[in-house]
Structures are given as C-alpha cells and as structure tokens.
Amino acid sequence: MAKRNALGRGLGALIDDADQVKEATSVSNEVELSKIQANPFQPRTNFDQEALEELASSIREIGIIQPLTLRKLNDDQYQIIAGERRFRAAKLAGLEKVPAFVREAGDEEMLELALVENIQREDLDAIEVALSYQRLIEECQLTQESLSERVGKKRSTVSNYLRLLRLPALIQKGIREQEISMGHARALVNIAEPETQVMIFKQIVKYDFSVRKVEEIVRKINSDDGEGNAAPKKTQSFPEEYGQLKTHLAKYFNTSVDFKINDKGKGKIVIPFSDPKELERIIGIFDRLNS
Image 1 (spheres, rainbow, N blue to C red):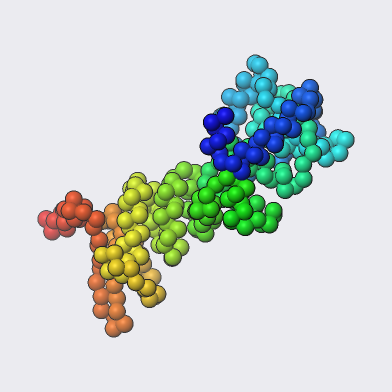
Image 2: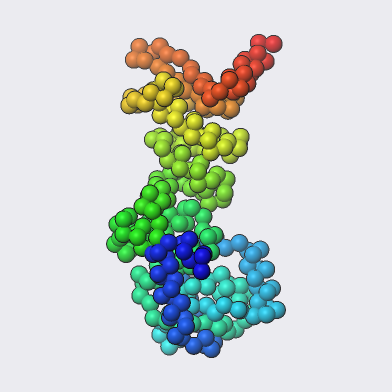
C-alpha cells in the first residue's frame, strides 16, 4: 500500500476506484484478441520489443496472471483501458483469447486511467508524461492547478513537464531516447534561443556534461557579463560564419563560447570557466597551440 501513497491522493483515488470496479466484476471473462482494439489514449508510444518477447515467453508458459481491463464498444468490439503491453505480448504468444475485466468508461475516464496505469509502472519517458498532461488539459478541459490535484502532483512538477514541450524536436527526441536526462532538459528550457539550446544539447551528448555543468553554462549564457549579473540582452544578428566559428570554438574548448560585439562592430570572444581547474584546462589548450 505504500506504493499508492507515493503516487499522491489524486492517483490513489483513481486507482482505488479502478480496484473497486475490478472487485465487483467477474474475472472469468475470456475475450477474443481479434475483438480488442488498442487504447487511442495510450500515453506510452515506445514498447521495447525484447521485453515484449520475454513477456510473451512467460505467457506461453504460465498464461496471463493479471487480466486486461477493457471497455465494451459493441457486441463484437472492446477497447483497452489498461494492459496494452499484455495485449501485445499475448498476440506474440499466439493466444486467441485473454482474460479481462469489462467495464464502462467514457473517453475522459479512458484517458485518465491510461495515464494512471502508466505512471504506476513509472516507465513513461518525460516527453510521454508531458504529452499526457497536455492531453488531459486540452481534452478534459483542466487547468494546471486542477490537473495537479487530479494526479496528486505538485503544480510545479506538472509545469516542469509541460515546459519540455517547448524544446526543439531534436531535443525532445534526445529525451525520449535517453541521450539526456530530465535535469538536463529543465536547464535547457531556460535558454531563449532554440539554436543555442540545440548547440548545448549536442555538447551534452558529445562530452557527457553533467546536469550541474549544463546549469552553469545556462547561467553564463543568461548573464550579461558572465559573472551572474543578469540583464536583458539585445538580440544580435551575426553573419553565418560567426555562428559556425562560435560552434567550432565551443567544441574545441569543450565549453560555452560567446561573442560580445557593440554597435560599432568592436567586441571580444568570451571563454568562461567555472573554477581554477577548468581555467588551467583552457590555458593548457592555448599552450598546445603555441608549442
């Protein structure tokens, strides 16, 4: 029961409701796989094929232990509320029928229950969670406040997930493929320019930057002088070759590099460092250039 408490009161209540329905429903229903449709509200879109094969092998040996939960569309069609992974594995195992609970549920409840089941399993990636929250807000007409109460999460947690959807598609893909963590992504969201977000994302992947390192880079980018004195920045338009040079230098020095240019065209190249050790590393690169 401790696991349910960790999910929060909102999710716990939904799960308890689902359990009560299950307890009141016969588990002897056998439903033909050919009559079952996938859940259109399923938040999880990535299903590990190797894991499905392993589950299918287990099902061949001992069958399905936990019945699927379905809703009846008509006499010949059912739709999955919970258990799509078991459904897919059962098809791989060659089953013709599966045990199932059958209950009534509207589209809004289908979406909520699908989200609940997947959060219980804790195997959704951050983008899938964010998209699920967005769908709940849009399709169930919820505010962030009411959504946070519904799923038993802090509003700030819900907001942090939703902000990930502002990131460029390349970075969202990187989150889904576990190239970067939620911590990296939360830091990148605080950068205004998508091009800079993508540049730093590529550095994270190439050089395996820690979350703390990325947070330092972001603070420097968002400060006016690299010393933490935040100030609004004027948008500067650089020739294309400047951008290429900036990217090249950032890769070469393995740190963020910035150009400071005034209205008269004068300026400087800034290579920030976070501590004496990093400064020594940068100096060493210059020493090698002069040797």
